[in-house]
Image: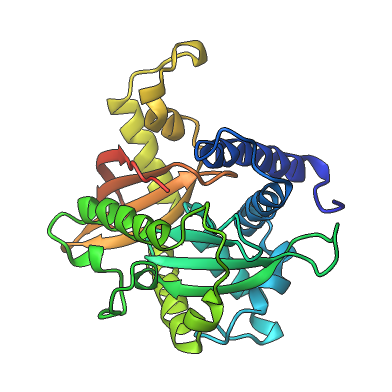
Length: 308
């Protein structure tokens, strides 16, 4: 592909390849046989969309603009704003494949922080040998995945007494409910997009992402990085690259400064709950509790255990 060129695009290509290996392992656990070629093509398109959505959203602007009309202005003059919003969404998304044994497989990209899902519908070409078409997309509130009523304009975990615990539980419930309804080995064809894709659902989903992006913009990136650096210096002992253990993922993420801000929620009078993900891949998500405004101080950090 011509757009996977240059050093930056090479990194994206590596991220895509690593992501596909992980996803193929997950799908492969369902059956002793290797995934059929069509499943591999769905995986390829899914990982490409996610990777480009994070780092090069302009490359998938056409697909994103073809979704139902929602809260985001579709005018050409607002394209850069739309792409920044969707790049924010793709950071930290979980991927799940559904109905891969059918001629209309589905892919769901779920962002637990926003409680929003982007659902991609694929179809086999009319003629043998034609490439799988996965260009049908729409965004929906997370409630749609678990068939719950949409009662609030913001994710419900935000108002919970233990927001992080609620976020992890809600994420697990959403993905598990979608998998029960649409297991990977299901061969039945359904018209998911006709049932669930609408301007209303698209608007609610986009408003949640826009609100998260607006809140995040109130946080100074420079002050945040200084706070993280101070936290790492004071709390995390230095380790050489060869001594890093698996449970050191959070210190490594913070020490290497290899993160992107993914979301922020104000707590109390001068507190923040800030989420960050690993750059390029966006697979790991960490939550940090901070206090202050112009000067920020990290009070605690944890790597979230989110499963697709």
